[in-house]
Image 1 (cartoon, rainbow, N blue to C red):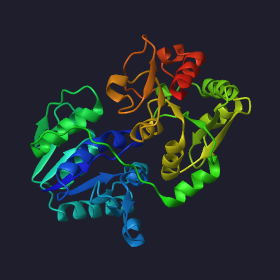
Image 2: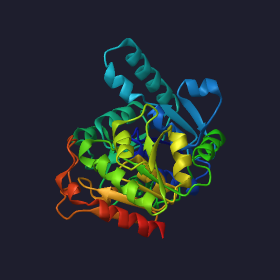
Image 3: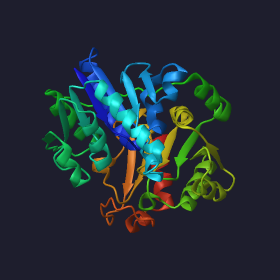
Image 4: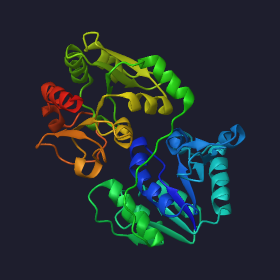
Length: 346
């Protein structure tokens, strides 16, 4: 069997899809599994390959979670949809995907863009959710699957299992361990026992105020645990604000995806909202404190690790990408987060 997974992004969503793919790989180590993904998230898939392959958006998995990945630069295409380079990229991707002659393609994203990519592959069977996130996507699926599981990790197993006609249960995911990133992390934190805080999120409604995270870092510092604040390689206003309110007991560390994995691997506890670094920590089985508001932790919470998830009863589930922090999330106090973190620290 030749199977194509379509889960383009973002970080947390890719991580939520990986236990299903790991289960498929464990059940069928001889099957060919491909993954269509944004290049920036391909580091999550344990990519290896020669530089020429990687420069062309093609890679091979070091420990065979997938056999090959395919570059879907959707973010860049959105910036210049009518450009010749965009059309050239899309036509080249279509040619590569069709040349792979997939038996099954599974859209684990449920968006119009992921459905279009999957449809381009012309697999013998194209499978997607009966109720995708963007309803128009369902018209491109050859087979629609009703998913009943509560958590998105289990939903992915249900969907992929139906596609290959056998039950799948979430399997343990192994994230890459790049030697350069590991040495970098050793130089940054040494043997220090620390909390890692990630202040950002995919949209504003999911962001607990960075100033409060800084006060959490200050309280943890007074308890003997320093804080590392995750920042993008270009820095961020949220990370700067968190550090500014930490009484000098936190520091921002800009890092790549691989470096973030190395930092999380060493963290005593990770504090974040519903965002990629929280789910990296869950995949690495590090203790986590999740701060939730508009997204439901029963569906999108950290999966498979020790955890404390805080969500106020007044929070309403909504995936509308509003800029302001959701009102219920603001009811979560600094003291509650500090207490949860100390519990996870033991």
